Each structure stands twice: as C-alpha cells, then as structure tokens.
Image (tube, rainbow, N blue to C red; front, side):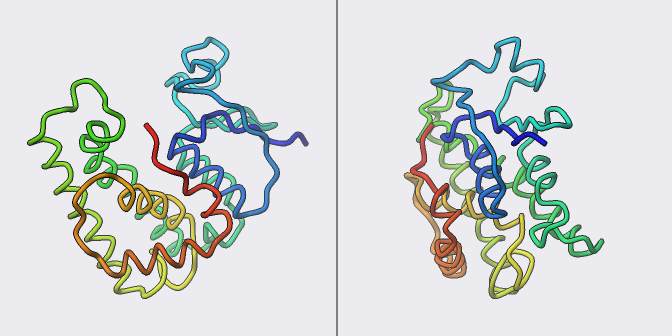
Length: 206
C-alpha cells in the first residue's frame, strides 16, 4: 500500500482541513504544491484527477478523490473523528455541510475583497453585508457551543471541529469588525491546545 498524496498549496483553507485531519489521526502522507503560485491546476495531469481543477485532491491506491469535506470523511471513517453510529454521524455531517454552504457563502465576498483583493469584490456595501452575515453565522456557531460547552457536536472532538475550527481561525484573523462571541473565544482556546491545529492554523493568505 502506497502512502497517499495530497495535492494542494497550504495557503488553501480546504487543503488545511485535509492536512489537519491526517495529522490529527497520525496518518502518513506526502504533499505536493498545486494551485495559486505553484503548479497550475488546469494542467491536464491535474484535471484528470479532478475535473473541477481545484485543490485539494487526495490520491491513493484507490484513485483520486476531491472535495475537501469528502476527503476528510474518507480518511476519518472508522475513527472517533467520524462516528459509526447513525445519529452522531449525521450531526457531524450537518455541521460540516453547514460550513460548506451557509458559512462559506456568508464570508466569501468580504474575504475576497479585504484579504484576497480579488477584482470585482471591492463594493464596500456588499463587503459590509458579507461581514454582517459572517458575524450572524458565527453567532449561530457560538450559540451551539454555549449549548454543548465543549465542541460542535458535544463533548467529543470530531471532524466538524476541524472544518469549523479553521473557519473560526479565519474569522478571528480577518480584518473585519467582529461581534464578541465568548463561547467562540473559549472554543478557539481549546482547539489551540491541539498540536495539529497549531500546525495548520496558518496566517490567512489569499
């Protein structure tokens, strides 16, 4: 069995989800830089692995796999990070899917305009609307953490905390006006005790 390869630059939050998961589980892997500033993802070799031409991609003996949350689930299956029981697993999936849809949609315009400096994302009113939506979404997460008192799905650290932990890091380190959510600050402090989180909670880059 060969060591799996992760294709993608560490500047990508979606790549870091996968790397944190692998390191959290102590799994061996190799990583190759692809994407912005490195090998282009529109290269025919890469497109053959992921027709969307996006990072990350995981390549192992079974072939290639893309979409960061799917990769995280794949490598964590059979471990405490992704419970076997139907209901607990559904709760993990619920919060992972919320991160990928509602939360990402909220921050996208503000982050693209303020951090990535992407052309077409400079409208100040739309940036503010995105910041407001981002704070509202993080308030929803804060309320959940008030209820659980620990991690997103309860007392146990799971995959949901990997994807939402990096999202919390992005929110805390982006140049925006933030609402003060105490449970989120406590959550971030708990995550910061984990070596794999400290390794991949990198400075936010475009």
